[in-house]
Length: 201
Image (spheres, rainbow, N blue to C red):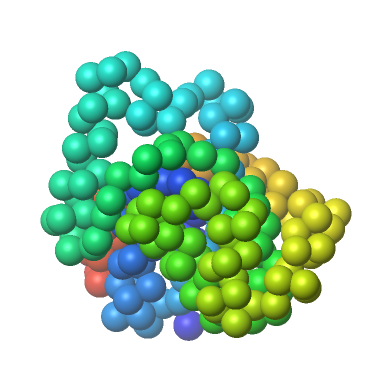
């Protein structure tokens, strides 16, 4: 069986959200599975000296805000520019990794719910209460999840994932790695599709 695809993303990444809505189905069409890896762009940006797209030059920021919405329309994905953006996502990322250790399918379901909460419902996913509400709707017991998010093991897991991502050359979200080939950005979905269909080019 072919190697799984690695999908690196930050929950505050609009382009990451768009890819999250497409990557599993695309991979399945070609007999592949996807490993999801939430990361923290804030940590990566400190290392690379970069910054969120909307906090760059005003002309660039305006372009990207428009492009987020246009790209969503192009892909047929619902989208609303969040009123709080960018925002920290470590609580959501920790919750994902804890859930992944319990139930992979539930973790994936939770990830979709978090992304849609931010980019469709304009909810503040940096607020732990929002994460707990999303979790409850996905039948996740808060009394178990809340202390788990403060555990040294889960904090270390997230740090390790970010470190491993940077070691693999990940500098932003979304990054998809297939057969050692790196694709960055939602606009690379057509290339990803061609790569999966042909075995590389």
